Length: 249
Image 1 (tube, helix red, strand yellow):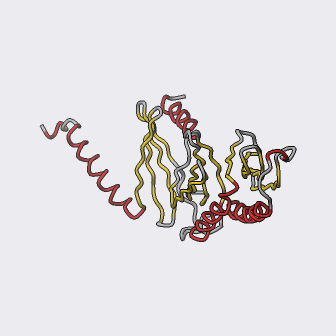
Image 2 (cartoon, rainbow, N blue to C red; image 1 turned 135 degrees about the vertical axis):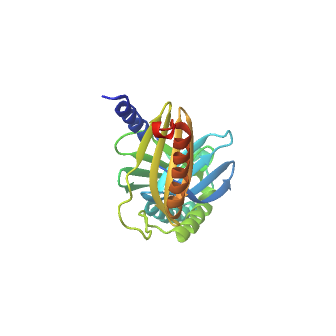
């Protein structure tokens, strides 16, 4: 096997560990009691999704990923949980449920399961949303204070109304996009990924070195001009570095 082939295989393996190129479309920030919640609408070549991040007082973060259709289902469950919470009397620390659970629901979306548990403990009532992946992997969860369920639901509703509830992209170009490419130069890896968003087709060129990653994004309408400028530099450097031919002496 040549060094180039070995480098390509190493790069392919490393590339599988890198997150796919994605773009952030919108963010909502909620402050609920001592916690801050971020709701980010993101988009990659597979479609749109919502990332929910909970940041506690000490800066600890917990995250969930929701397909748009899953976010819609969660929004509807939040309405039901809010109605139950409103019907409850004041908390009674002396008479807590045996397992702490007041109501539970399960959401299943492809390879993900979401467990929704309205719970009560000595600190109060809260909605715990847990996410697991059926193929295995770590369990992630957030704990939403019950008083903030309506605010959280309304924020989800705003994002769903603006960006839709379909998981798949609905852009104008429906054909297959070019495959990704990888190139290794010395101790650097370069990745060329073609994607699509609401503004059109683009190419993202990423440079990866150890734990460092940087990228540029080039709209498809600029590819030809980008290529011409690059070719111009290649030709100029070729003229400057190649020795003159014998006939030119």
